[in-house]
Length: 469
Image (tube, rainbow, N blue to C red; front, side, top):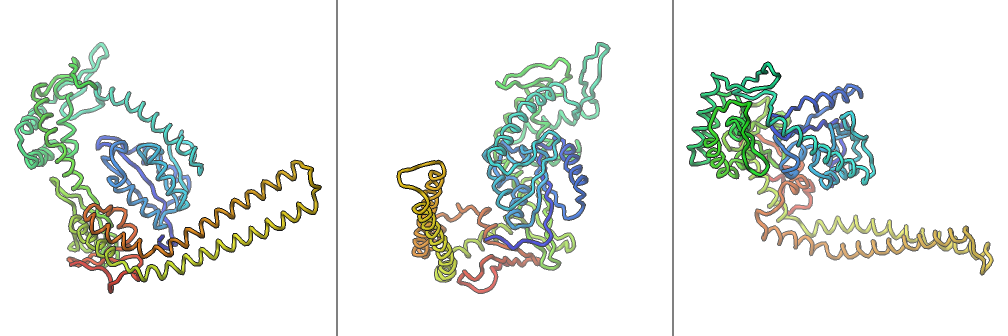
């Protein structure tokens, strides 16, 4: 069930960068130029996914994209501006999924890259453009990535100098060298994931880098004066002064690899958004997310009422409980009642179409019998027969639809019973991210009190909102 359309729809501006060090400026500049050209200054919302590679993660792990698509579904977005198609999806298959949203919810789509083809409502063309953009981007990124590995434009701990012969060399910065060396030494000694997060916390202020950048430093063989090839072998870089030994670098990689899965889970917990973004009950403002630290979930807070907070994990627990409770309390009787009304109307509509087609077929057949001589054929007569065949096929299709709707009326209670049985058996395997957007209209937070408003309240065998405290 779609939400009612809002009166003032927004312009959504989507950007994505796949690593903390990737420049966002190009996308922002191009997108802002489009806003300026179209004279759009109000009702704008920016959606940006940071540290997200579209080639490696699914939609549910891209919070900004997921939030934007929900607002499309809610009828709150009029247009979407993005730099290129490859900023939105990791491949042509996923882009097709987003494309269907654009079409279904009548979204105006604008790509800000100077060489990007205009958005087309033709699925084949869009999938082709998406695939072409993906392949071109991969080739360019591969060349740039290799060059940056050998000759980074800048890198903490190093000073880039040019020799008289025009060659570039990288000299270790005397002030930062001991700190970077100690970072690798401390990491080589870790024995738990907590040790790793503690090392990151210690060196973040010393090196003035984020969590992900500290990990990037630890994964960069350039500090050992080497480049790692695709086959895993190492190539010495004669133009680089090593800060650490290659042996120490390899030891650190062994430690990082052993905790990689736990670390990624921890990072995901830090930036994870709740299934539904909550609203402050005191002022009706959408609450802000403060990222967690050291692998722990973040918290939502109200910018006007700072004491009104809730953790992401607690909020998700309330929402999941509410979803299970709502699904288990679906009223088959109420659902069947309203569905019978809706389905009966649809059946009546199709029956009217069948009757209308029958009338057209009879009139067309009468016209043929009165105006054409038996045994004689021609293009005009062939066209009429083709038209009659098409109308008969439409009739058959409508009859099939009516039959399916009649069957659905009879089986509705069975469907509801099946849903409840599946919930009991699947338990925590439910796809809560999808179900939450379908069932929940709003979540209000009032200090420790959580109020969850559901769509279709009239179909639940319970009274009032679903509430947690």
